[in-house]
Image (tube, rainbow, N blue to C red; front, side):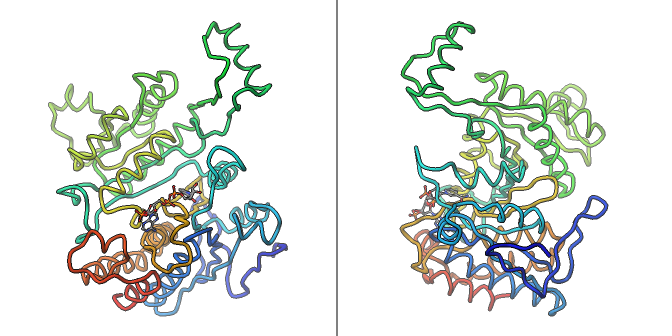
Length: 414
Ligand code: NAP
């Protein structure tokens, strides 16, 4: 058993392992949890209670999660004097599947985003965000039920790769001077600079995961989202490499949009997945005007970040927006939203997004019975109109409850 400085390994659990390229999940798996900053403290408590109750009910006590606290953000700084201790990375690598609350990131200075660091260091290259409407939840659109998408956002490259130079620094001056002299560019000397790398490797592994997901879940299409008309060699290349991967690795399972019209007269052959692409600005209006034409969306990092929040807003807000960061095996499950500091420790915020992220985690572990139980109970709790403030302000005749009470109601409704 690994020795840690502050992490206490539960005695009653066993690690999840990878065997024959698959996860092997024991009956009492050890699941590391980062509680998170701000509202993380409220939502994670509620989530653990709901997950434990669902697992207990689904498997009649034969399965149980052994939660193991690991640390990042403010709590890590208190304990270790650093925001992201090495043993947090080590624990996630060893135990493979983990749950995470939101972490604070200062804007325009201070340290780099802990979230981005976690994704890059652990090579969690796909950020997976399903967005669907729960019946009864208020929404700014007339037909929220028509949106049911899963966003696969590339997680390690693009303008998020952290290669930036501040205006006026030695480095910024050096790069600007090299570009202007050697590449004949005309960059103003008072510019800050950032680099946007998008690689064949990063694109292919992301698009491969998105298509495989569509195959496994029997979904109708995968759309490559890009701004390739302007950024030709990064976002345009993302599109081209995505199509290339689809036609070389999944030839018998897919049809491209061009082929649909050239070969099949616009009628989709049975059992195939349609691969199409849309320009980023267009997809933002398409998800509003023709949402039911989209299913899986594969995007570079920045587009995917914007698109996930926009889609979440369309189905009732960030309180119901789950997510996962997935690599070849490691899965780190977390909500789309941040630490919402003004609501921290007030027991008011919606725990739905982390609860639904935990649902994705259970599904990833093959514990789909418990996952389905949670999804049904969240719908039942909304049907009964007992909801947190965010859903309450959009629903007529609903009763407003706090974070912990929402979890209690969910457990009752299982
Ligand atoms: P935020 O924490 O996501 O909150 C923005 C707003 O979204 C809240 O004021 C609230 O809106 C709504 N919201 C968020 N979570 C909700 C929930 N569980 N239930 C209901 N409504 C919810 O965004 P932010 O204020 O821009 O960011 C705060 C900090 O979080 C920053 O340091 C940021 O870097 C960090 N962050 C971390 C992550 C992560 O850890 N993955 C992700 C994003 C941001 P109303 O006030 O209208 O109710």
